[in-house]
Image 1: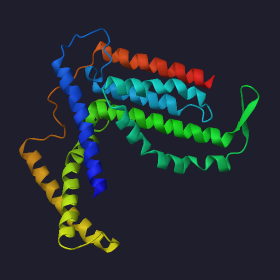
Image 2: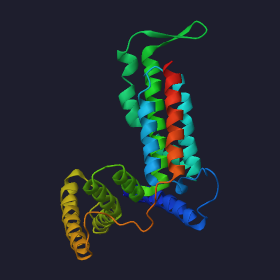
Image 3: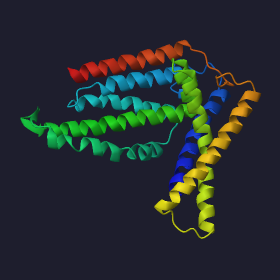
Image 4: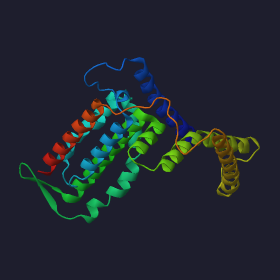
Length: 271
C-alpha cells in the first residue's frame, strides 16, 4: 500500500514539475535572451538528443578512468538547474538505483585482479577502481535521466522520442500506459483497502492470485473503454499536441555545444 502511494506521489511530482516549466514558457516572451539556460525554451528533441549524446560519451569511457568522469558531472547539474528541479528530489530518486548498482558492481573487487598506479607512487586495486567507476556512471546516468524526465514529463519524453525516429505505436503505447497507470494504482489501492475492511488481514501469498485476477479484469475493461473512446474521436495512431515546438537555431546550438563538450571530455579522459 505504501509503495503504491509513493509511486503515485513521485509520478504526480514529475508531471507537476514539467507542467510548471510549460507554464513558464507560455508566460515569457519568445525572445528573452541570446541563449537562455531554461529547458522549457528548447525543443524536446534537442533535450533528448543531448542526453543521448551524454550517455554515449560518458558510458564509453574506460572503466578505470574515474578522474575522467569529473567533467561529466556538469551536464546533469546544469540540466537540473535549468529545469528548476529540486536537488533533494533528484538525490533521493538517484539513491533508489544504488542497491541494483551495488549488486552488479560488488563482484568486481573479487574477480578483477591487478593494481593500478596512481600519481605519487601510490596504487589501488583494479577491482575497487572499476567498482567506483560503475557507481559513478550509475549516479550520473540516473541523474541525467531524472533531469530530462522532470523537464519534459513523460508525455513530452514520448513526443521527443517519436520526433527522433522512435516508432509511433511504441511512443503512443508508452504515453497511454503512463496516463492510465494512475488509475490502475488507485484501483489496486481500493482493492487492498476493501479486503482489509472486510477482515481479510494482511496480504498473504495466497491472497495475491485473486487480487491480481480482479485487477487484470478491471484493466482489460478499462482498456476496452479507452479504445472505444479513442476510435470515436478519430484517433489515427498519433497523440495530438496542443503546443507543438519548432526546431530553432538555439536548439542546434544546445546540441552542438553540449556535444562538443562531451567529445572534449571523453578525449581528455581517455588521454
